[in-house]
Image 1 (cartoon, rainbow, N blue to C red):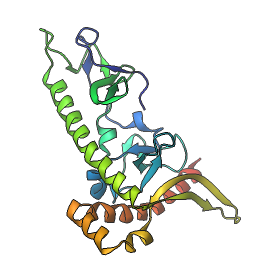
Image 2 (tube, one colour):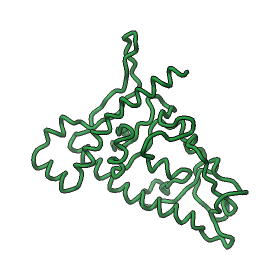
Image 3 (tube, helix red, strand yellow):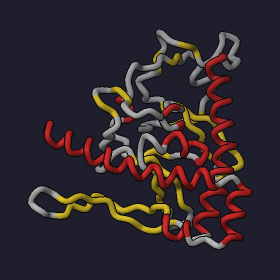
Image 4 (spheres, rainbow, N blue to C red):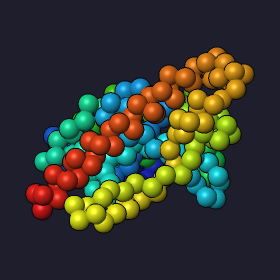
Length: 239
């Protein structure tokens, strides 16, 4: 989705204007999108919530599964977002936050210089004539700060469930009409059986932390896997 992500600079980008595009084609090749834990309840009615493991750090990252093949977003049809919920990671585009020298405590707001939303002729200016930040840029930074604050809480939740060994490997696939099994990809899923076998102590701890609703949302979201299979079949038939 991002092509040329650079820190926002009042000198370099002083003439830049933002004009929102009327479609989501910028994300048409995005088959997974980052999700934060507070998004799970809303996202659960739109797409499956899965997890990716960073083999270097050992951390798990929650994702919205938007397609069953790489670079294929089944949620976007003719430029329209057909699901009820749009992940914050998609809504924030063409902006993002990036760490400075790998330090997550030192973040800067960046923009995608190659995004078609930017030009120098029409739209909302990122900076005022005196070089100060415009209202639109202030709103972007406020959104990004809120996103980063909630990201910390989301990491704590994911760390907790991973330590309780509630994330297990899964393979996505389907069976063709001729009986052939086609495996599409692998990910980590929330284990309902292990969740139901938690000790009373662990279950109470999750309730105190406010995690139970988030866990139930993950389980509910997996019902949307059938929706993706249906959309995949429709795309195959239309090809």
